[in-house]
Length: 571
Image (cartoon, rainbow, N blue to C red):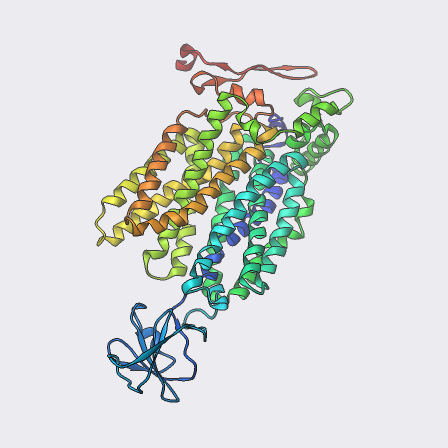
């Protein structure tokens, strides 16, 4: 099947149309993954008081009106003394309030006072933020843990969506899943903006996470199966660049819109154009061929020839590979193809070792990516600019990854950058805390290195596994990736134990996976495997193989991949 691209072109007009159509939707995936960054912002707040505020007394004994005391209140740990229009004096902080028995407007007070709960709700600083889900449903104090669960529950939905839709895509095809998940992104994205309480908000976002993850997993496989070897590296990597653009869109919209439900609605509308076009996307010839639907494969080949203006005699499927005379696969053979599950990724020791290594790379890439991303929130300065730069720094990392994959190979690019990120984590641990600028530079360098590995692993996984389990392999890997993204926020909390604990954990995992990556086979320049046997043969002795192909009149006979001798290798 790989010979098809030598005939119709590796990235012709037809592939370009399908590519930009499908990648456009990946921008929406980046949007929904990071949208909660500004929806769950917790502004300054205090326990509300029953009445109209006339005067606010701050810790430095300065007084303020009810509208401008937020800027003067620099430490949220200090109490505020508030006098109401009726003369009552209250001592308030974030999660409690005291009512003084005497009308004494002084900061220091030794008289009697009564402790009361925050039954009147909370008062929020709306200087820079009109509303968020935190202010909407008072997710502070004893309900603060609910706000912290918003992103982990979303990532749990991403985890399930990756493995579920990856498996279904191998059974029913890539196209139906892309239709369903892209439509689901729009519907669930809009629904999030109109949720009426915290629990409905979390539930709808959970389903949004599932379809977003499902689309992102399948679109990588879709792109891989429609682009030839010569353009596959750049095409696959630019899907990640589209995701990074989504992050930058979140920063831009967050800067312009400060009401959470309007912000969510605008972000969801980015999906709408693709909804009207996604129905024109055809199924991939690789999947159709694996299911024995040879007539449909020939129709797609003819369409690709017309779009790409291929001259000469039309290409027949029989010229690419052997097919049955009746152009139909044996029913038992097709049912066997559809019976693959996650256990097939461990069907022998070679596959088991490969799968464990790949899963660890997925986990480490996501784990390090989100640890560096979440830590960037504390860089200081403009938070919207910080997020924008966080997305922008990924784009050059993907360009470097593309150049490295094409020149050095997938494995030989992935392993060094994993090890480099481990070294950077070690350097960060040695930097004095007062040198914040150097720490920021090294943190961005760490994310750059992890970004190379994070972007490369999608394509590398797709090339390591055969067509029959390719979506399942990418989906299960993405599941491990999301486990890393769920663990990352809790890892960041470990700074309370030791400030460099997150960097130490990322460094250890990156070093381990970098070493394991060196044991995987190289896939640069190799055709995609269609069967489990072809994929196993890829891991011949020392991971170095050559492919012999014998072309006959009625089709192409692919001989087994044989290890290269030292003499041939030197030659």
